[in-house]
Amino acid sequence: MSSLRSTVAVIRKDVQSELRTRYALNALLMFVVTAVATILFALRSDQPTSTVLAGMYWVVVFFTAMSSLSRIFVSEEERGTTMTLQLVASPAVVYFGKLVFNTLLTLSMTVAVTILYTLVFSTFFVIQTVSIFVITVLLGSLGFASAATIIAAIVAKANTRGTLYPVLSFPILIVLLITVMNATAKALDGEALSAALGDFQVLTGYFLAMTAGSYLLFDYVWKD
Amino acid sequence: MKFVKYGSILLITFVAVVGVAVPMSATPQSWLEFPLNPMLQQKARNIFFHVPVAWTTVVAFLVGTYYGYRYLKTKNIDYDIRSVSAAGLGLLFCTLATVTGAIWAKFDWGSFWNWDPRQTSIFVLLLIYGAYFALRSAVETEEKRGTLSAVYSIIAGITVPFFIFVMPRLMAGLHPGSKGDPDGAGPVVQFTMSGNMFVVFFLALIGFTLLFIWLLSLRVRTARLEYAQSIHRS
Image (cartoon, rainbow over the protein chains, first blue to last red):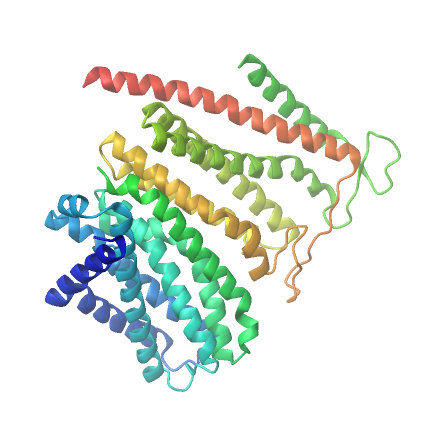
């Protein structure tokens, strides 16, 4: 089987088992709703600026991701299917399969947060430059997922998984978070697409560097 | 190792004495006077301690990551011992750099913490060390512990160039050489060292690096003994 086809098979396996239980998707959606509601309670009738809203947007995405993205490897360990996966697929195939699945999860998260934000902050959360917003969300999700996947692989082999995951991820993701918050604020302020080109370069560089590093190091984490 | 030990003691003592004792004057006449920076005043002397400590932090991080990489390649537990010893020292020097920097910031920029790019970077480095040791304590088997923490330190190392090259572009800074602060929250100090200051500064860099090497060898030797003892007991 070619590696592309086996990668697709790994993604399909994850999507199928996800659709059977809907564990991650349900938890993710509830988490987004809870977090946005908490922000609404905190803000009351204050009028948030675009910087605050852009920051809050990615805070919700970050913590939602931290509650669900580690499942990708932890569930394999819990179900005892790690060995089988090691037998049938090469580490690179597993890594890229999981990366694509995590990217899909992150993207669905951003879609959920965007819809909720547009509904509840209808007067403040107006995306004025759609192109900046879409590119930021796409590149940001890719970078987010690539860092989250390798950390998830590390955490799955440790003992205290739940608490360790955000602790390990935050220092790695901080560059990405600052950049996407910056770019999202630009999209809300209605700046021209050219104003965010520097941010896009950073996001692309981050994604490529992180994916290349993870690809090279994944073997060591994956094999027992 | 004797050379490293006495060299570091000698150099750091020399820097401490000279860095504090040599008078500062607005118009330095002789080799035994430092120029007085109107903005920094006497506080400029901190440069002999703060910058070398920060430099040693970076060296410790690189050394720790390098030994982590060697461990991944060879699976020789001695490299893991060296890696974790370097990381422990990195945490120590990182804390020292943060504290000396924060005190200096309080008296020159007005507050202990300003989220200047370099302050942000050192904050993230502290977080990385915290996460690194949290990860180590969460893994029981030593082989897995070494592998996972080595992978984590390399992954963390990938983000370092972003802090050096990207952060200063994204946010305004206060350290000398920053792009400036458009909001006027604090002055960017223009600061160039004179020849004699540079000599002391350079000796301080060597002194603190030697101190790091000495402390690392001490820590590695005790860690090896502890490891041998734990093998012996079990």
